[in-house]
Amino acid sequence: MQTTSQQYDVAISQCKDIFLKKMKDYGTAWRNLRPKSITDQIFIKAQRIKSIEEKGTQKIQDDIKGEYIGIINYCAIALMQLDLTNDARLELPFEEVENLYTKHLLVTKKLMEDKNHDYGEAWRDMRISSLTDLILMKIFRVKQIEDNNGKTIISEGVDANYMDMINYSVFALIRLGA
Image: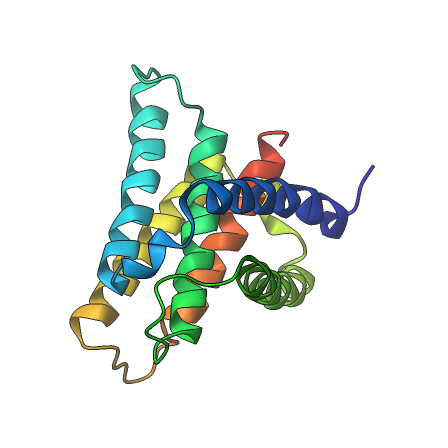
């Protein structure tokens, strides 16, 4: 059986492959997205998953795994946009974006490993629907922080919430057999 770290790497490899292929198709069109728009894209994907989970059916045949991959990739975009706040370029070189993606996902994986150590892999016994709900909760937290112009009194910032959403999505992908 693969370790969590190995399963994580497999899931992220799939996400990165899709992200980079889409970048070859579309370039860095996502550079035009404002932070609130990225948050709303993540919300749309998480809300679709919840809707399918609750209804038990779907009319559009895009699978739930694809939605979790989308959440991961939009969260990666959000983290990259935070890095690029003072960079006005709309088009970025492929290698630069690939390096930024890798950098942020390595930091996010390290966070997962630290939390996973402390929580004893509790996510393995959670329902996938609970992971979806946690992602939605994190989205609502980010929306509130955005509405407060990025200011928090005691809470972690939007970057930590994006990383948690990535990790919950990876856990869901692992549980779904991705």
